[in-house]
Image (cartoon, rainbow, N blue to C red; front, side):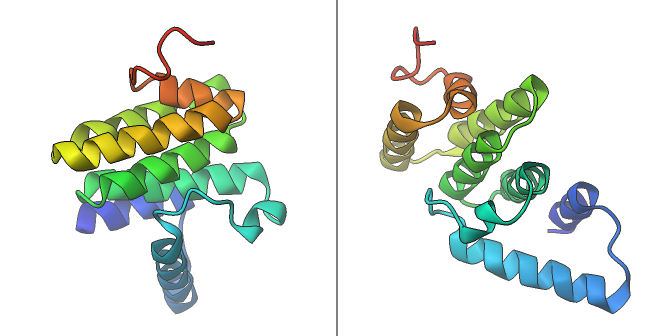
Length: 144
C-alpha cells in the first residue's frame, strides 16, 4: 500500500498539508466508486485532457502496483488512453492495460476482461484502439 501511495503522489505531485491529504482521500474515494465503469465521468467535460490522463494513469498504476482489481486497472488505463496527448501517452496506457490483463489469473475473469476490452476496442477512438492492440488480444490483432 505504501508503494501505491508513493505512486499516486508521484503522478499527482506534491500535496500541501492536511488539505492535500483530504484532497487525496476524496480523490481515492471518488475513483473507487468509478473504477470498474467504462462509462465517461461528467468530469471529462470540465477538466483538461492532461489532468484526466494523469488521473486515470495514476489510478491504473496504483491498482497494478498494489495487486488491485485487474479489470479496474485496465479500465483506468483505457480511460487514460482516451485522453492521451502523445504517442508516448498511448504507449504507456497500452503497457498499463497489458499489465492488468496479464495479472488476471482466473481464466473466467480473464476471458470476461478480454471480451470487455474487445468491445471497447471496437468502439474506441484510435488512441484507445492502439493501447488495446498492445495487449495482443485476438480481436485487436491485424487491425489498424
